[in-house]
Figure 1: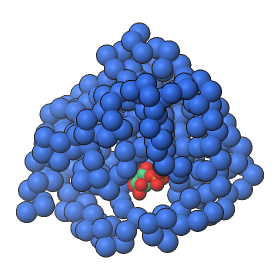
Figure 2: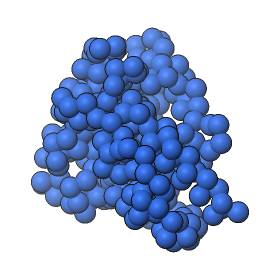
Figure 3: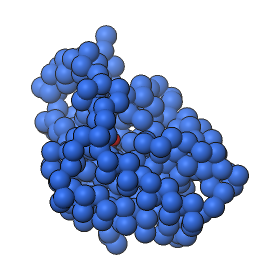
Amino acid sequence: MPHESLLTTARTIALRAGELARLRRSEGVEVAASKSSPVDVVTEADRETEALIRGLLADERPGDGFFGEESGAERGSTGLTWIVDPIDGTVNFLYGIPHYAVSIAVVEGEPDPQTWTALAGCVVNPASGEVYTATAGGGAYLGEAPIRVADAVPLSQALVATGFAYDSTTRGEQGRLVAALLPLVRDIRRLGTASLDLCFVASGRTNAYFERTLSPWDHAAGALIAREAGATVKGLGDAQPSRDLILAGHPDVAAALEGALAQLAR
Ligand code: LIP
């Protein structure tokens, strides 16, 4: 498998970080601070888990760059950068909803989703024990089992996941769009963890996913896993995923969803 060593590093560290997050969740979780809005929170477990990941990567991969949600970016000298969300689905984690993830990806080139090449990625749900992995050209897996996107369905039969911003004005806009989309699809799922939303597309648990206002660490690993499982994963127009949009699904479903969203945005 290509980039197997990088994947082994990502998976080993993601599993250790997941164990720490699960332990901290069992001990009780409190908000440590808020960020972009009163409902955009960080917990001490977020910070502690990222510190663990960052330290283990520094030991294992000296010279690689780091780009994490809680402790920022550090340029490396090897051309590789680790993109880390220590606890994706922070609000689920805070409330004890067992649907959150440690997301670790390693990319080649600048740590910019518009230009990077993702080489390996791992998304671990510590609550369920599910481990999603992929390497560029090596396929996508849930545990040891290969995974593929669900077969194409008409948009009216598509189960579509999405998510909403921490900014209330943006959330209002997103809610109006989802209300207009709802009668056009089978149903909507809002599960609260972008990395797992992308893994659910990869494993056929949903037909498509879209969201705006995500950060690079939310989708770095999940986008590679979804692509390697046969999904189209794109941003707005011809762009790569960005804060403006990430959209993923079977190529035919992704195209139909993108068309519907464009129509509804007019
Ligand atoms: C979350 C994403 C989720 C989105 C939330 C939040 P966080 O990331 O995983 O898809 O809807 O608003 O951005 O903040 O838990 O790392």
